[in-house]
Image (cartoon, rainbow, N blue to C red; front, side, top):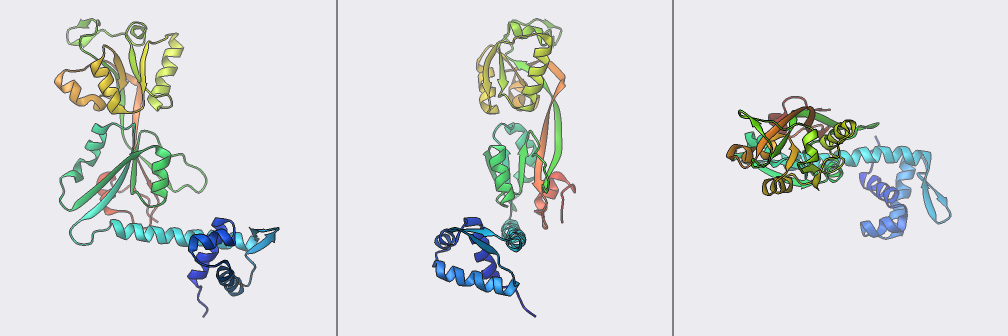
Length: 301
């Protein structure tokens, strides 16, 4: 029985991804002639030419494209194997690597991770960044989970799984000394009309709740006084706390300020809701800590 030489397959995969022998040889730190010999050995074993010459360039043949598809699967599985065993428990501790979109509420993240925070047998790694950047790390098995306030885009062959883990109505929240009347314990803030006289600090354009807000004020013919547009929720909290303005956020974002009275909830907007997602990808061996956080809804296969 003939066995596939995986060194030869790795060399072929490197040539295909590098776009040529010379570039691949530099990346692998071998000579082009040696790399050519390894490629020829693989072609002889498969009984098919994997590249054809196009001037000085190499182009994949139909057999080469089929072989590359298999090679991608093989080496992706290898990366997943290393990642899986890196995060498994060897000794007394397990590791869970979380990516969090920079605009996501820190209070929400703490609530989500609370079941694991005090555990002595768990090491948490939490990294912040843009959604696309974090999804690339998730694809490369450098993360186990991404927390986001928007789902990953699903396309053909996508292995993302968007788990809706929470959904909250947003509120108009602001400084308690604003010139807004109160009736009993309730604010008399009128949304969206009062935004023509009270400045507002808004999430950046593109955020789901900002899109819904813009749609409502446009339909009402209101031009709000925008004090600032902020991507980072921590900065948004600081600006609204230090100014005579209001903001548009789920109450969890400013929970501490609401509890101490530094900010008050003027108006709950049930028609605008913030969604929170845990994004994973299909894996043969899901990190067991994920099951503790998101239940049994993970794709395994």
